[in-house]
Amino acid sequence: MKIAVCISQVPDTATRIKIGADHKSIDPSGVTFIINPYDEFAIEEALKIKEKIGGDSLVYVISVGDDSVKETLRKALAMGADEAILLKASNQKDSFGIAKALSEEIKNLGCELVFTGKQSVDFDSGITGQLIAEMLDYNCVSVVVEFKLDGNKIIAEREIEGGREIVETELPAVITAQKGLNEPRYASLKGIMAAKKKIILEKPAIDFNGFTEILNLHLPPSKQPGRILGTDKSAVPELVRLLREEAKVI
Amino acid sequence: MAEKILAVLEQREGSLKKVSFEAASVAVNIANQLGLSAEALVVGSEINNLSELSKFGISKLTHLRHEQLNNYSPTAYSDVIASYANENGAKVLIFPNTAMGVDLAPRVAVKLNSGIMMDCMKLEVKDNDIVATRPVYAGKALIDLKLKSEIKIFTIRPNVFKPQTVNSTSVDIEVRTVENPNLKTRVTAFKKSEGKLDVAEADIIVSGGRGMKGPENFHLIEELAEVLGAAVGASRAVVDAGWRQHREQVGQTGKTVSPSLYIACGISGAIQHLAGMSSSKYIVAINKDKDAPIFNVADYGIAGDVFEILPALTDEIKKLKS
Ligand SMILES: Cc1cc2nc3c(=O)[nH]c(=O)nc-3n(C[C@H](O)[C@H](O)[C@H](O)COP(=O)(O)OP(=O)(O)OC[C@H]3O[C@@H](n4cnc5c(N)ncnc54)[C@H](O)[C@@H]3O)c2cc1C
Ligand SMILES: Nc1ncnc2c1ncn2[C@@H]1O[C@H](COP(=O)(O)O)[C@@H](O)[C@H]1O
Image (tube, rainbow over all chains, first blue to last red; front, top):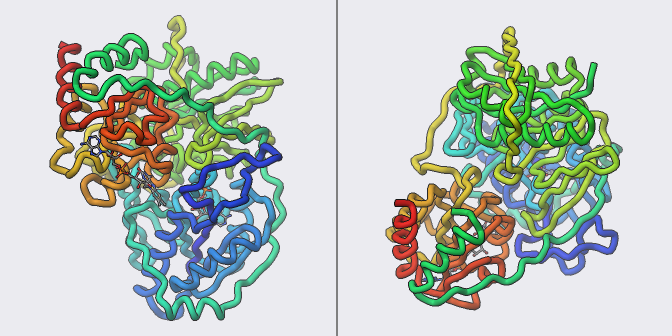
């Protein structure tokens, strides 16, 4: 079986965001980019499935982005993915456009099972997997914390408010990975060496303008530093009074 | 046919969720400004509280009904919602940004070839168009944008848009039976987690961090949460240590929340944690280190020991409530 994993690269979560001169994107200077944390769970699950079903299964990692994404793709190869594909697009931030490019490639490759992260921690939309599924007419289970594949049949658990839903469906399908699904492996030295030799296939992403028009990227209004009411429990009545009378939240 | 704004409501176990009323109210508000009409749509089986919608100015509700649609099915729900929207001239669709909304809205978007913007915290009408504001980089920045598509979908973050009540009118409820729902993907069961309230839905959150010293001390957090009717949250440090479960984690790799009140106890305020909660309306910090970064975002703070402050705070609130 052919399995695709879609991965994106995001600013390190410790990054302090600076607004770029265009007021539409961030200032990338000094920003370290990492693989989107949820995508590591997606890669791990794909590798586990490949190991389980064996045969001539292949895991493809695919990303839409610019040259800088190659490093992240290489990391996925080092973890054990078989092939990497970079769909080149310089400033593609529109989820619809990204999903169109990815689904086109997934269709060409003939992948029946697709993993994505549940959300990329830059734009935080959490929708790319569902968009791909709908574009390809695949089934989809999002925010998955447990995944079982038996022949064609899928039983997955997804996290929702206050519990988990058990979802049943079948291949072909897109699964979006949530933390808890597995423990992503570290790349072995052998994996890292092998990844260095692999070729990352590059092709242009299909052209799609997308539907979003960014007007303005800005920082949240900075908060006035608050009041420290005291250092021991004698401050508690005043705190409760303020919450009640000033904030009116209790 | 008049153009419409459609609020797509969410029901769980036969009741509309609170965020459904928020979505309805947003739809009414935008419709008034754009001169369109606002309607609501819900998919499910038996639903008990539909008439409450009248309080929010919705005059028409369509209930797409089938016994097997009590539970969520992405395939069936997206099919029936997209065909309804198509047949009824929906120009704007508002979904709650819940687990269901995030799963469902993008699928409907592809079917309608519409642009989609998730997790909006503000929707404003300017020059006869909708400008959405949403957090990016887990709330470290905000972005204002417009959708250029003919049909537009927005999902709204729970707890942010307070529903506005209007003089009660009656809702005209039309029930349509769904024929042969497409159940290719379906929810077959729900496992409730033992915690009472989910951080993503709570109006008040009491969170504990490494300053709580151990899992055995979280009863202090739980007791305060109990008297406030609040959900329990956690920092990643205590989730990684196995003291609390990941579903309670607040922050960039947990949940981003915007409650009315967030009480951080023994949490330092690392950038990834702040990202997830700094859009809360009011923030209280209890931390014995007066220089902890959490105090930079807190409205009120006590620079003291959680083991002394928490029981006193719980008692004081109990007094107030009795
Ligand atoms: C990729 C990545 C993603 C991350 N995502 C998240 C995330 O989603 N959410 C998140 O929370 N973190 C996240 N983190 C971790 C984050 O960087 C911090 O390590 C974490 O938030 C710290 O948790 P803490 O505040 O509980 O612990 P600490 O930083 O150890 O703080 C403990 C605090 O308790 C105070 N304290 C100690 N004893 C007492 C006492 N008796 N009374 C009062 N106060 C006391 C101390 O003064 C201190 O300020 C992430 C990190 C990375 C690298
Ligand atoms: N540019 C991209 N290239 C490849 N995969 C992506 C890209 N953007 C998002 N994804 C995938 O879609 C998931 C959800 O992203 P998002 O919808 O942007 O929150 C991510 O975890 C990735 O697996």
